[in-house]
Length: 470
Image (cartoon, rainbow, N blue to C red):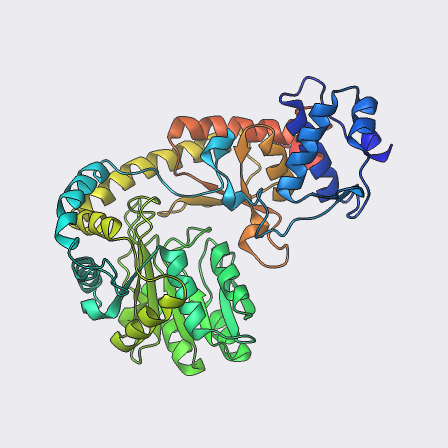
């Protein structure tokens, strides 16, 4: 029986059904077990492996749930590959209740000020109960605070230029939905925020990657990509770019905005991480500060500075475009939740306190992760970012996808490099966020070392020659 011969599961692995499912999935991902191959009947595989049929049934159920197995009544089961954007084992869809350390997301925990802001917001809420609760632009008091923050950062902004959204991802989808059509070229960084790629793909856009590294952006490359592709839109993250951590300096910002003007390209600027400098860095202005013809659209979010559970983001654009976006959002939703907007408005009043807390906690976590990697995985290469929430690590002699598969069996859920690129690129990279507590990150590094040494099931395997040199 081909599957029984190929799968190598440690009999002591617990739970065994998960280890068996992980083993089969690894065979499919490695190409050792081709797609559309008929799987043995549950009873037959159970007899061959000398385990209960219930165990094999549970493993098959897990494989079906993850998209690696398809079944039809009376026809049996056969191997499959899931849609990476929809599969339940997509690393972006991991949940805290699956028993794994969630290193697939760079979202930090709630700050100390959140409870007080929530309490005050609940006290404010009855004043809004007389209306219908729908405001497609967002509550005026929140838009006033967002506009004031842009003004303080050097970009004069009026509240009517702000649209409150259900997070930065929602904001990106609204802009893409209104401004991008099938076949339009959209320039994106590589690597970049994966959900932005999916938003543009959903619109049928032609995606044009342009490289960005720890050293930052090459303005001539960005300009060339916009000009040669005739890009309708370019999506950039200049502030502690996700995942590289790069920070775009003002001369480069000015050059990129000027290049967009000459190419006739709109710039969608994601400022989700802009408030999270962990070191003293050169003062930078929002790219909109260099905009002379209203082509910069800015996106922000409460999720990284404050809390991911607050599904509040925003768009800064011209007043006319803001009105168009608020009208267009009726095809998606009607308005953002009133209570959450009130919470974020209260948090804006104490923004500097949260920034100080984030600097202290994220810097401690970053330093713990860096120290652990240098001790246990010295062959992995990375630059220590001056802000943001993650390391972009170049692996030594290993691919990030098989490492992510192996890490699952060691209790860690990872986001491998290809999730941040196009067409399977960036396999040699891994994003490691440092938004978890220092002690937990120290434990994660030990587990990653074990995943490299022992593979997906915990059964020892010969080390890769390059890994053995670490």
